[in-house]
Image (cartoon, rainbow, N blue to C red; front, side):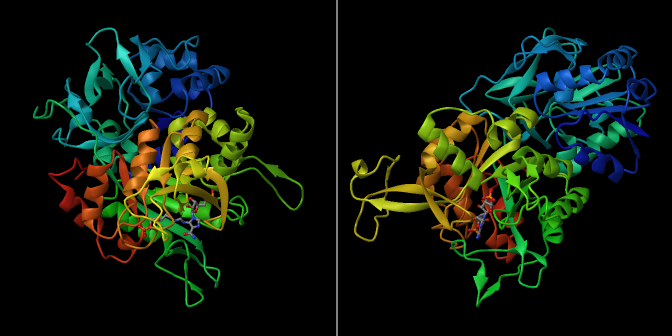
Length: 523
Ligand code: 1PR
């Protein structure tokens, strides 16, 4: 029996699913007594340090946790569950941590994008039961903006490089904690969890073979999901966002099955877009929540879900905030949510008033679940101009002139799946969303979507250069070479494709095989 400390933020469903997959049952902590009577305690933390410590305090769990840890009983902290062991965090300067390891949690200071999102390696410094079956070549999934800085080196279990070398694991006796997410790190992560759950005789140290770790570029499979005309939830795919062929919604498979296939084929992440979410409110459109729940039982890489995340009042006058929708998605197994149409309206209002309201979907969700959990999905379309001064938008010079020979274009943001344009450009949208607390940009391009003609490198380069959060390049992938193009010609951290994966034209393994030795990739 594993006792799990769920203080109410983020995706503990994945941790429960992973532990149950390993054949163990899970007991959720309801009171301090449950901590004190635990045989093995797992503490997955997500969100922000300050709110985590406050909630632990309100629930009177801090003292029992301190007692449990001091007694050197088996403990595995994950992500914020590692940071909590320290004296405090720069993220919430006046709120003390558990003070078990002397040191402070600090924000990354690097030119690289922050949050540090994706698959990175570890260099082991201590023997541990956690390392059974590992070779030190493995990659784990990280997602965080802050990292722990211990005062002394004795508790450092492993380190990882991201601009600087940082502590990615600590161990003091039976108290262990990792900054990465084992429950989201595929088979390798499950092995680490299993090593904690099952007691091995001796701690071991993997063969030391690497001296530096490197963040991989991520390959993401995207599933656009909607009900077809028969009412079945299907994965569909548009051609420049038109998902109908001869009047019918294209049906490329079942969402749960396809997601599982992509996980098994090596997808680094899976994204679901509920593409009719703008009209079918997700809390009334429960099949999508069910898809997420079922997927997270079998898929142990990060899941993002988008569609319909906005404030909503139903026919009976009941109000639901965007945070309620996001919370339902997180509880069902999502690690990140993506906001499309609502982000455009939020930014349009911001441009008019110049003020942050503190109440937008981006701000409210980021406050509770952390910036890394908020992705902005942009659906831009090219608008050509002859002279950059013709419009107030951020304009780029293009190598591919418009129909009248125009040498410039801006990228108009659209809402409702490209049905309506707004007077906001994609570069400004990305910048404002970063300012409001978004942690990542999913950058589609209507002109390229479903065309197999390659990513819009000009758009991706322009947006990635304008923000310091990670960018997912999307739309237009037609062959493995297109992934190499986007990774070598822009600084995008990841690339997403749909059509070529769904139709099995270019399987994920082929993309990865092609990129190996040219780009850092998770094998
Ligand atoms: O506006 O917050 O409700 O979110 C709706 C979400 O649904 C948005 O993220 C929006 O991008 C998406 N969406 C809405 N309509 C469509 C459509 O296709 N008719 N899909 C749609 C957008 C774009 C990508 C696609 C890539 C790669 N799909 O997700 O997967 O372009 O495709 P490719 O590799 O085949 O070229 P809200």
